[in-house]
Image 1: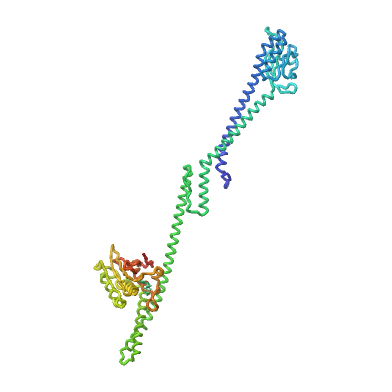
Image 2: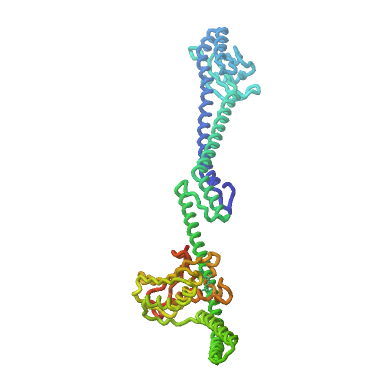
Amino acid sequence: MTERVAGTTSLRFALVLFVVLPLSLLLIAGTYSVLRMVESQAEQRMKDDVELVARTLQQPLSRALERDRLGTVEEALASAFRIRRVYSAHVYDGDGRTVAHIGRRDLFVDSDRVSDIAGAQSRRGEYEEISGQAVYSYFAPLTSSGGRSLGLLHITRHAGEMEATIASLWWQGGGLLALAILLMTGLVLVAHHGAIGRHLNRLARSMATVEQGNRAHRAPTGGPREIARLGEALNTMLDSLTQVEQEVEERRVAQLALEQQLKHTEKLAAIGQLSGGVAHELGTPMSVIDGKAQRALRAEDLPEDTTEAFVAIRAQVGRMEKIVRQLLDFGRRHTLQIREVSAHQLLHMAEGVVQQEAARHDVTLEVAATEADRTCALDPALMERALTNLLRNAIEATPGGTVRLSYTAARGNATFCVDDDGPGIDPSIRDRLLEPFFTTKDTGDGTGLGLAVVHGVVEQHGGRLEIRESPLGGARFSLHVPQRVSADGAPPPTASAPVYSA
Ligand code: ADP
């Protein structure tokens, strides 16, 4: 956070600049004036000390001089010197000659100056240089009891000693000030980190994580309210972004599926058209062949092998006609011929069509219509064709078994079910069941169009085909269609995939 990003100052730097710096300047100014005050007080105190010594000595020295007692003068000076605040002390007589001294001998003033100061009869103190030494001199006149000038007391104190004391004061003050500024800077930085910095860093790390592509990541929403709000705003933005991306992805997938369905439908339509065309062209020649074979069979005295040949021709033509019919069923889109028909009637019509086939395969056909007397409005011919296709498949899948055709209706929806107890649908072929021409039967036995036709019929009725396991053990094909389909009301074919259920 200390680096400068895009010309902006870091928050830490701003805090130091706008908080620590002004506070430091205030502190420096405050400390300076306090130190100045303390300095002048200390200096004054040191001067006062010297003055006090001088005042204390002034009386006894005056008296001793008046009585000419040199010994007493020296004693008094010695007692003053013991105080240790004094550098030197000189006592001058009225002519400016040194009468007695203690401490540094050379720190005396000349007689003219002594006469001047003694004559003025007033105390005074001043900084000066004597014999190359910086001192603070204090002069106190010595007078007789009658007021006559007897001499002068001159006390000095080392100026350097005072300066050193004051300098140490400045050093101590400055050191404390620097420490205070350092502490303050540290406190501000620690407070910044604790209250703002670490939360902002966490937010920045979250943003970096998202930027690196982890779109599932969400920013932590702890810390001060303002930063928590930032985190929440970021998360809301990410949520919206994810939602939009999901929507776009869903739309893309749906569009892809639609395109594939469209392609599939177009493919089926093309196949249907082609098959229909071929079947149509084959219809007439096959009728001709069958007719001619039929007529030839009517001739008398036909050799047995010729009769057998014509019968075989008719059987094969019959198979071809079946295939052609399925091709035509698949290729043509019939216009729905909606009629009221009883479900019961429809089931029995379909049963009638496959009865012989069932008998041939030794299959028991059951018809169960719980609400058989209810009528439906649909295209009976197409529905019958769909049901017979399913019944044929079931019969072929379960020789010697049971096939059940049933009907139920509920809430406006009709369901036709064909169940068998055969082997069921192998999961590996489930997805291909409705593909035109897909068959598992031997060549010639299956065209692979039966279920494609069923699917087409159900779609035309606006319904759906469901394939699942039968309670009988085999497969169950259910046709769910509206109970009442209007002639033009059926939704357009959706090419919907069949629904598989386990
Ligand atoms: P085809 O009957 O000419 O083969 P279909 O489209 O009617 O064509 O059926 C496709 C395939 O579905 C069949 O070959 C068969 O494998 C499977 N099938 C259809 N009905 C059943 C059923 N009831 N039981 C088992 N498999 C079935």
